[in-house]
Length: 185
Image 1 (cartoon, rainbow, N blue to C red):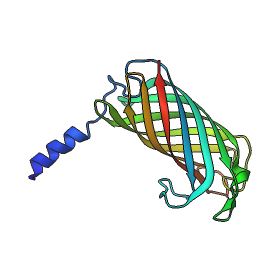
Image 2: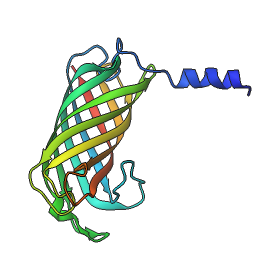
Image 3: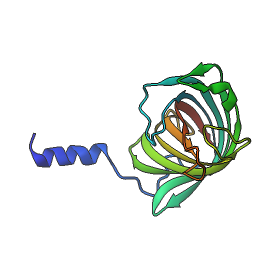
Image 4: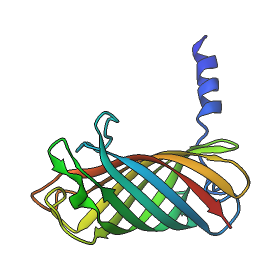
């Protein structure tokens, strides 16, 4: 394959998103989502999915469309519940069964007819401080991809990372790999 053919193929596959078309919403103005994720023991921003732990995240999200520097985006209110049980890799995961409230914004990077990729940032609070995070204040980072099943329903795969952003001496994190379902109306 020559360089021009490779460039054209890349352009077809990785189509930059445009704010006029928000793939999260398909023309609707509201969205609810339910996400569930499985924990990984890692302090990295992009954790390798190698050390799965007995830690689960359930998240309910309400979103509305917005833009971020001319890219389609969604602003969201998130209610999150983490559920841990047992001990693994030196951590007592049941201590981290904590509710979290978060505001976040996800931005579409690339999209196609029925798919999109996105990244997001958020800030929130967990109900109690613990020795793993060391702060009630949390910062979130999300990386994911979505696929539209129908005009108003979609599925998303994601990696979610929560940390204190170096605001406390303890600087470990919570990290999850998961999937969710969205409904736009």
